[in-house]
Length: 253
Image (cartoon, rainbow, N blue to C red; front, side):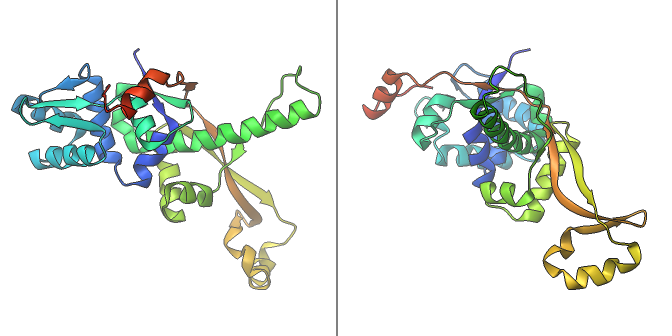
């Protein structure tokens, strides 16, 4: 099945700037054309159906947002829209990382979960990279290390996407429900009885939100442990002539 490599920085940029819906339209257009296209009435109906838009205005508004961010261009005299390539967007916004997530057309059905899963998976890969580096420093580079699930706090996701921690929790749950990540609760048993639970919370207010009770047993709840079901690869380096064409006013998709 054909897939596209979406730069992970773009997956962070769009929800942070509240343009996930326009970005969803951008990907739909990118999949369905070779770089430029007209959008007649029949295509608008197809877009509305595929992306579950309620009206033509929804399509028009999201096209305008894409134009505002220069993800697409438009020639009024010819009526053609020009769908920018990922590498051009990388250059325009200064995205330097080559890390990218594999995207299939079917991911449009759970796009919010897909973007959240990509952001979270990137955090996992960062932690995994640090673990491997630590193993190499210990002289274990020839050994196959087995790493545990990685803790991903809502506060970290919230900081990256500039959202509240409650919204970050919803994003994480959406990614889990859509099958992009698997969440395991991180519960540490505490040596206190159920009867003294409320007294302990009062005397430890800084930990009170993290203390929970399940089946009359008291636990300290840490950040959720996450495993990812997404596939990441590395994009090719941006060629120098691409950079030169942008500086010289040229264009490429």
